[in-house]
Every structure is written in structure tokens, then in C-alpha cells.
Amino acid sequence: MPQPEAAGALQTPETSAAATDPPATVLPEQTAAARPGSTRPSVPGPGSTQASTGSEVPSDAAPAPVDRRGRSEKQLAEIPQPVASAVALDAKKTVRHGVSAAVGALEAVQGEAQGVGEIAGPALRFRVTITNETQMDLSLAGVLVNVSFGADELPAGELSGPGTAPFPASVPPGGTAEAVYVFSVPEDSRDAVRIYFSLDAETPIAAFAGKAPD
Image 1 (tube, helix red, strand yellow):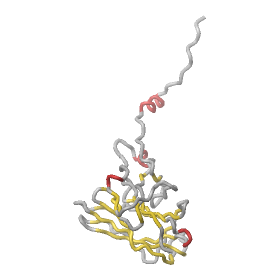
Image 2: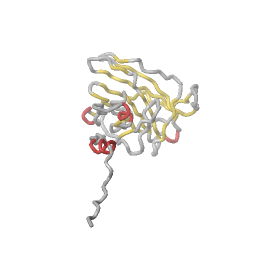
Image 3: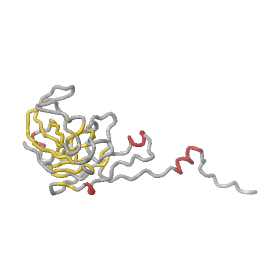
């Protein structure tokens, strides 16, 4: 009696299509997953970036931007945003060709709570300066800033004051723009502070790391 053939996996149109789909692009190891509905980039986990020396990191040292070609909005939303290696808190960082960011005037303040969910208390205030050396206006509509502290990189809460100031809508060619932020950071957790700057969803996040004032 002839033996029945060995059963194989049932090939449905869906599984066949999945088998022929190209593999997803592998991004650099240093990534920060976006939180759905977040107003700023989520804080990367411990060890996701490494501080480097020197006053500036060249643009060719940064991870590649997010590749949007041939991807749906849903697929793009699932791609983690790359995070560049951290530089010192007082360093200048090339975000992408012709665009750099720097953190300055970092100081300890008594944070003021005015918004929903904010808690007044010990905080850090700092200025972020963006320099546009390109030949086109640079939109700042997508700028997001976040702060973490401690060995576990706990997220710091943003506060309304004192003395905060937002970025303008854009930076003209050859110009600079500044914004002032305040984040709640405990006084005993400032030996390892990281400030994350995201220009937009396609550009790798810049990271600044070091000891902040008590």
C-alpha cells in the first residue's frame, strides 16, 4: 500500500507573502524606543550610550538616520530612534550635517510646579543652543528634550520654571536658537546626569553626559 506523503506546513497567501518580505533594516545597537503618545523621546536604558572625550564629535561618527524608504507610517513608528554616543555636558555635538547642539548654563535651581503632574523641588536648569550652518531654514517643530539621572538612568520630570523659554519655530541659515529647560533631579543623584536632544524623528538623538551641579 503506498505510504502517504509527509505533511508539510500549509502555505496560505498570508504566510507566503510573509516569507517573501524583505528583512527589516538592522539599526545600531544604541537605540531609544519611542513611547506611544510621548511628548519627548524616551530615556534609553543604562549603557545605551558611552561618554566620549573632546569638544565635538564629527557627524560621520553618528549612527545613520532612520531609513524611511519603502516603509509605511506604521512600520516607521515601530523603528527605534538611534542614539549617538554621549559627549560631555559642556561639549558641542554635531546632530547632522550642518546642524549642531550644545548644552550650557547648567545650574541647580528650586524647580517650580505649574503644570499638571509637576512636583516642585530640587532641579536643574540648562540652556540648549542649536546652530544652523546649512543654507536653508531649520525647523524646530519636532525638537524634544529629555533628562535622566543615576546609574539606572531614571527619567527626570520636566518643570514649568523658573526661567524656562521655548525654542522659536525655526533657525535661519547661519543662525542660532536657544531654549531653557528645567527638570526635577534629586540633589544626591547628580553624579551621572544625561541630557537627550532630539531634532526630529529621523535624526539620531544627541546625548550629553556628566556630573551636574549640586
